[in-house]
Image (tube, rainbow over the protein chains, first blue to last red):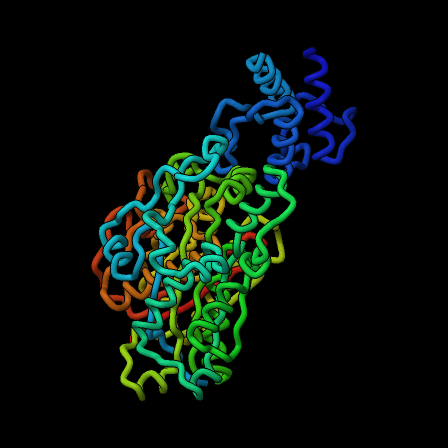
Length: 87
Length: 402
């Protein structure tokens, strides 16, 4: 189950960043990915749709809230936590 | 080129259903934002807005009118009654031919779209009311206004998102100045506070869930409002000849495009619009005492706007006052510039600068005199009103005391 969440999140991020999944590494930041604010908002929307979760994210203060977007690995972990909480 | 003056003003917004009430609220620093009251609000993430309360269309319009007037048209007609009434103008044959209407709206009849999509998609109906199209079209308000007051000159609507009203008023100004019209009724209207209208904005994730706090370090987004502002722009000579009470002079206007990003603002585009408006008005930066900011309360707008003001005004940026009245009446989207022009008129005519309310924490990136929380008495001779739209379209109007 955890691997599939991870694979889906990576696929979503890769699509928004116009990269191959194999190009992604857990340590990459949004800047490394070349993802701007619109790309990030679209990725979060895709995550919400894919997992039927609500991601706490306000574009005015991206670092506020519990959803960690500091790196690819952090985003994967954050989505895994949301999915686990959803039950 | 002819001089252009304002001889009438009208409004309805979350603060009041007329200009005197709005001035009183702006003076008091009253908050017009509160819990939303609308259908399906439990399915919205955003639960606050600057709604027009106690709105009873039947008190103002008959059944035939209501069948044709979306709420954005209703708001326009009410504001126009007040503005044209104040101007004292009567549009007889000759004047009627040289008078027109240019209004701004971003969404037009959003409530009509929303209600009828519900009917066909959600309720499965296969028939809608015959007037859906003439009710929702963006030019409906301008057309009804021209019909009601017999205005037969140039009449149209512009839609540039959050700058719609400023673009409309800028064009109205240019038409009177050039001689293309003697009188132009202008401003804008918006009525987007319905389920679909708010849901769309939610998607962008720039809305605040608790308050609009422009320029404050802890700001966390914009709050939507609704309503209309209508102004009567008239040639100075015409107004003088009939002894009209002149509220202010429209001194200059400029518009620019960032040609950059579809949502992120640019300080250069905003700065060029402000300096352009001052040049058009033959004002030096030192002449401007007050700016009604675009000031949406988003992280991006407010810091970009302050940087633009700092560049455009140099040392004088520290001496002028800049406030965002959106903190009180919310962001009226396509109508916002028209309602905000009222704060500019109040500054020039009554010597009262409307405050930025909800201001809690200084932000080093917004280090200007934002008139925090309390209105201020000050004599100003010239003011600017800023509007910077999604799509990178900027429109700035300069007013001067007459």
